[in-house]
Amino acid sequence: MKHFALLALAAGLVVSCSGDESGGPNPPPAPATASVTTPLVPPPVFIPSSVTIRAGGTVTFKNADGSPAAHNVRSLSDAWPLTTLQAGESFDVTLATAGQYPFQCTIHPGMNGTIVVK
Ligand SMILES: [Cu+2]
Image (cartoon, rainbow, N blue to C red; front, side):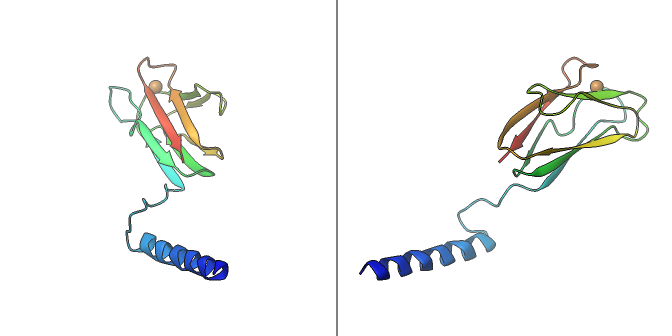
């Protein structure tokens, strides 16, 4: 009887896995990568202001090509060092631990965002 219960559990797992692939009840995993950029013209904002990635994923910050303004990206939780982006520059942040990682540009008050790692 115990053996049967284990088999039933295994069968249930298989069914639930195939359900994922066909858009079943479980949400799809968060993407491994996301991008945050800045506009060519003011107001200075991060686009989008919130991105979601899976643990171990990477977010690329990019100062839009052609924008005359420099920006920086400061992690409010010190998850990465303050990084300045001149026009056209970009940098990657890889985050291994689930959580919320708010960030801001210290050059432009109100230029804020959040990375959600799931
Ligand atoms: Cu800025």
